[in-house]
Image (cartoon, rainbow, N blue to C red; front, side):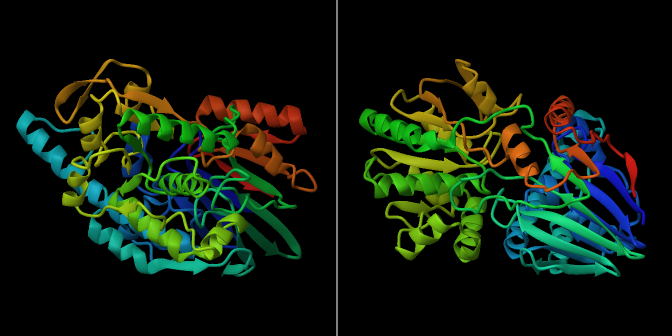
Length: 468
């Protein structure tokens, strides 16, 4: 038996997740993600290594665009097969891909105007990578599957999806190949979640795998204790309420926003904070929250009990799901303390900028950061303690309190990744460390070799290996 695996993304970096597996004469991709780091974005424009029309299927671990965002380009260039994923992943991916296509069109139009004004050409084409029409064409190809229900994707080739505990509907994908009486299994963790996180079940432990591709986003770190989140959040809300300001929360639309709502709901039920208005001011987050509401089958026991008690974190008194621009603008005319959750999570765009303008100069308000802030982003400049920042073309002095709460990460840390791997009853033939910055992936690989004594490697971009 011979399997051929090629690493087309998330190898030595953390976005653009894409792997090509050839088995029993069939070709399929696991994930088809968009590169988001500036230094790798040109790869999004490169031709696929095989004609998309020759691919039999795509297996999608979850809906984040660094795993799904190149699907419209794949379809645009000829892919007509099925895209297998859970029902929740399919619904969230459709929201994310339509939003990504809109941004592709807007960015291309802006770039074209700028180049015309400056009389030059840029490094990328002025046409969008793909259009809204291309994204719409990909939607009928999504084919929902259930956790732990094997799906035949070719003669002697099965895919089994397991709960990864990362975001709603996210999966670990196990490929089983049978040929001439032999069987091999290849496991793709996708993005692995953390145990004991709210709303979702813990990542499923697998007891067997011949080959494992494991993510390493935080393979060199140990997260803050998530048990501290409720008290830290309560402290921020109570102190800001006492001061008479607002709590402004830049947040990602998928999972992070819903997790904040969960913790706010718990604090309100326990009467640990005043009953303030909470505005979810992100059209995308509102749509994703509706997907959460529509899929209680993915909830963990505690979340299920809350919903059965009529105390859902997506319906609590005082929660307002903001949809229109006029509703968003009206928030800043409300007197008293409120929490405003808006995108983007790193303050790079979206409605959060307008709420920052209204609150950044108020000493009584708090800017609360609950996610990673990448270098060069407005969010990073604020949390780094800069005194002045430029927002929407004007400079503002930061007078508001700046607070951060760690422990929200939806990615397993080094210890949690090792804990998941120890569920395997015997060592795999080989472990591939992927989806991590180059130095982080190497560090985690060395840790695994020392801790487990396994055969561990860190593949590079476009590397190809034969799995015997």
